[in-house]
Image: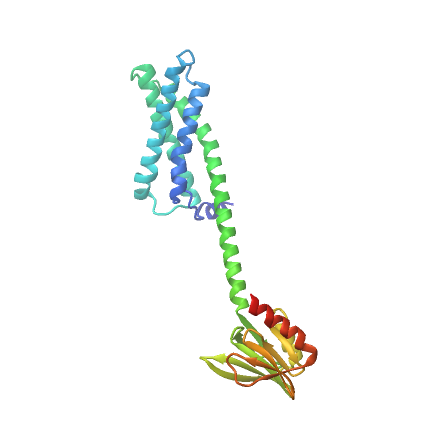
Length: 284
């Protein structure tokens, strides 16, 4: 149990390292202290005029903000270079003690003309710790929500980036378990050769090819999720992003490419689908 507690208290916690939250921790406690004193009028000065109470509550709020600013933006960097949960608890407790002490001193000066009354110091510390615990819980929940949203955003960005990077590449694995990975925009077409497929691709503006021991049917299955890859013939799969147009000749239909001189045969059964894709690309 002590080991688990030590492990929890040693975890990094950047609430006090975040500049935006330090600004919030100057403004929010100041507002709550002013509101608390004005609404509830502690220390038995309810008989005092409301105008005076308003001035006092605003003064206490300003002093609270000043104390928080000095501690968070001036002193803190000389005490803690980084924060853990344990250090955050210690620092938060110190802040509450400072707020209670300074406000008790303020009340002493105003009401008791500088005569120190220990009971009011302890009362102010009690009020401060009680109110401060509520405010601290509120700030922790705000920070937790902020961190959760931040992590979810980072996760989504990383996931989108990962998916995008994965979608840029196509991976084939032959019958022997040998992988071949290629950028999808570099792959031009695939043709079958007995028990092999011949993959033609562009690398450094040159047409290259590689033989893999794999069937064209399995290659077609791998490429199904990429819409630009279409079967155009029983022996060919083509990347229509590289295709230019279909022409007709005495030997049938041929598919012309932008960067390849060799035309690819197109079966009559696939011609309509290929033409529709090419036309949609031209109008896109």
